[in-house]
Each structure stands twice: as structure tokens, then as C-alpha cells.
Amino acid sequence: MAELPEVHTITEDLNKEIPGYTIQDVTVIGNYRINPDKIGFINKLKGQAVVKAERVAKNILIKLGSGEYILIHLAMTGQVLLKELRDKTPNWARVVLRITKNGATKTIYLCDMRMFGKIEILSENDIGKLRSKYGPEPITEHLTPENFHQQVTSKNTNIKNVLLDQSIVSGLGNIYTTDALFIAGIHPETPARQLTVDMARKLLDASREILNEGIKHRGSTLQDKMYIDIYGKEGTHQKYFRIYGKNVCPVCSSKIIYKKVSGRGTYFCANCQSLNGQKTLF
Ligand SMILES: [Zn+2]
Image 1 (cartoon, helix red, strand yellow):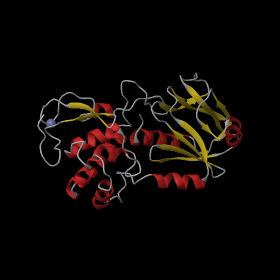
Image 2: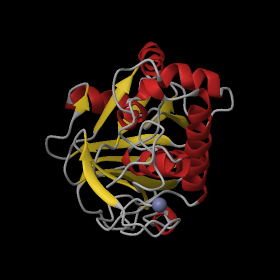
Image 3: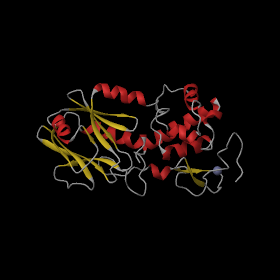
Image 4: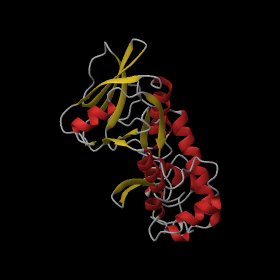
């Protein structure tokens, strides 16, 4: 599933490639989640200029000449691919945008094997509402440890759930949360309210470190190969995972524990990640 580094990579690349193009043709294949309905969607997009691509949390936004935006949410298995005219249609293509500039034609494919993703047209006003749904991103400089501490201790649940809650902090998903908690030495089931300012500082620093690394490595591609960039290339951050998907702790060589925390597969080292400020005994 695409998290901040993957969506960031896709958006940055789109922003290098597609501004200045005009949408010539739109095809919706099958029953993909689009908004408005198929005819409205196609009519609104045809002839629109592409202004820029940007990201809000894990949403890809493409700003159009009309001031409206295309929003793409990749969910579990969504992919955005940019192809030349001669390239063949990729697997699981659901929405196809043919774009042209000075006689050059490219094709943007939204592919989605499991079809949990969506594509919508939103107004500027809708985008304002969308932005307000999300908490600050750990990678933004203006999020201070004190603010972060205040945010994470406001919820009556464990710290892993809080980090996954996009209204508290946005952009962290299961993979980067797992590794951030490990770097910070915090057990994923620690009650969020018990985090001290010092623990919150460590966790914010760890979240920044792991997200920035993920961006540098152009995202993580797991064995399912579901995340690829717009050119069809895999990310490399999976080679740098700390404990996600691992059996042995890289620090103390203890066996990594795997269990479901709130339904999400979670890895942790009971020796390096203390619960309630204490070392846990397993
Ligand atoms: Zn360890």
C-alpha cells in the first residue's frame, strides 16, 4: 500500500512530466470508483489543461486549468503509469487519460488490481476541506515535538493506532510506522497517553528519518510488486527496512515478534522496544 514516500515519488515525477499538457481523451474501463458519474467525469476533463501535480497526505492531486483538481487515491493496489503512445496498455487499467502538448502524446493510466482506490474531480473548495481532514505531516519542519506530543497524547488508544490515524499525523502507514517505532524504541502497544515529551521527540525524529529515507529511495516495493513509480520502476527502500518483514533484530539479535495490532501486521523487538517505559519480558 502506498504511503507518503510512494505517493510523494509519484506526485513529484508527474509534476516534472505533465504540466503544460492538455487532456484530449478520457476512457473509464469497467466500474471503477469515479466521481462524478462516467459521462460527467469524461466531459469535465476533456480539453482541460494540466497545471501541476501535488500531494495532500496520501492523495495525488492534479490541478486543472479550470481550477478544479483530479484526486487519485491509490489505496491497496493502485498505480499511476505514464506511457508513450506506442506502449501497450498495462494490466488492470481502469482510467486512461490521453494528454498532448505540441503534437507529443502521452498516456496516464490509473491501474488498480483490487479496485479499492478512486479518482474524483474536486473543486478548490473541496480541496480546502480535504486538507483540513489531515493532521500535519511528520516531515514538515513546523511540527514541533511539543505539538506532536500534544497530538499523540490526545487519543485513548495505543501509539501505533495514533500514528496510523491520518487526522493526527498524516502520511504514515503500516510499514513506516513499524520502523519509526523501532528506531524510537517504543513498543507499538504503548498507550499513547503515556508518551512523554522526550519519547514524542524521539518518535517524531524517527518518523522524519524513515519517511525521508523512503523518499530518497523512491518508496518501498514489496513482493507483491504493487508499488511501482510512473515509469514502472520499483522503489528500493525495502532493502533498508529496519524490522518490517524481518525475523531477527538488527540491534540485539532477538527474535522479532509479529502480531496483529488493531488488525495490522506489526513487527517489534520486545527487547529494544519497551512497553510503559519498562523492558517487556517475552
Ligand atoms: Zn532488539
